[in-house]
Image (cartoon, rainbow, N blue to C red):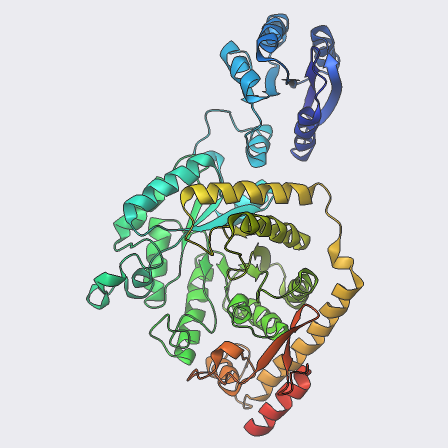
Length: 545
């Protein structure tokens, strides 16, 4: 085990930075020796020799002029150690760090603006100032494992022109703000990429960047080849799914696929396929990505939550997502959990809902099927006021850390007002990192709240009722109702899977009514009183059977 010796030198008594540096070093596998505040140059050198140090860290956070003189003396006194192979690092305020940099003695200089993962990367052996693509894992699972215990960070980004998006991606990458940039492409690219005859010029740039060729995607990927070399991913599209998948793999080395079960079709107006056919197509997409060893996310549950479906339908859709992913050969499954959906949900009941999702899906895990947890803030939950939105972002991510996510999908604080710019994303990333840092220092175990656990158990019981209802509408010749497109489609048609926003939808019943009761989103009867899932489904199944 390599050894780090570190302390604040001279008259400097500020050691919080040194202490945090050593804490990260321990995470990276180092043996650490903390020398404390106001350590003399001779004491530091003596300790380095005594402990057989591989790396010596020194800090000074007072006046730059005095710091420069002190560090010059230190460099002269410690040069023999450096010549023998001992490495030296400095950390201080930006003005002192600037002076330390000019000495040319320290292997690396930290001025406090670095991301935690940058410091960890250095402590894990990456060469400062010489990092290239090979230093940053370029697959999702490797990146998650490399960055642990910190989650990897993702944000959606796409401007109305290709040029602006290219510039923004470079800016985000150089700022090392994200591990994954999710390309926000316009609706025409999602639906009509291979059909220019169907594209409408007036819709160009509506909802994101207007990519129109594989070369456009290659240019976006090339723009990301700087900074911390973030991964890229894009919408899986609403038509020509396999052709798009093949192109994404070739042009942007897509980080993972995201596809729903029931959405992005005629039911929500985002694609050309009917409900049953789209389910079949989506399953084919899962199978393709599974065969080619890409992770798959089913961005399914939050579509129900954003349409005010009851929590139990959210949980059931989470289970169906993982179940279908496994059934169609996915090995690395990304379970997306959008908090704050619907927006009126309380933090306690929101957390209970996500814990129920995890409890439902956990038994599916085995050596062939791994579940990676991804959390995000509710898209519809942001206030318009900038300061309030910033507070909401931080509070939501702190809550999300209770489920120990592997991926945090940052939804920027500007989303209620405008699509995030590169600078917006960099700012949102800083806020998210701080909330994550605070949680990882020792967050209370909110999951142990008795009310939360009570709600988890209730949702698990209710979800079993819903899943059994889906199975009950299948005939005996159906091998597996939970993966059969006709049965899944029928579950929506008859109202087992239902949401208030689906009223008057040709594919759905849209008859369910919900209310926020004690912080949870529940189904209610015509009088507005909560009803159990058994009671809700009894009439539906009676009519069906």
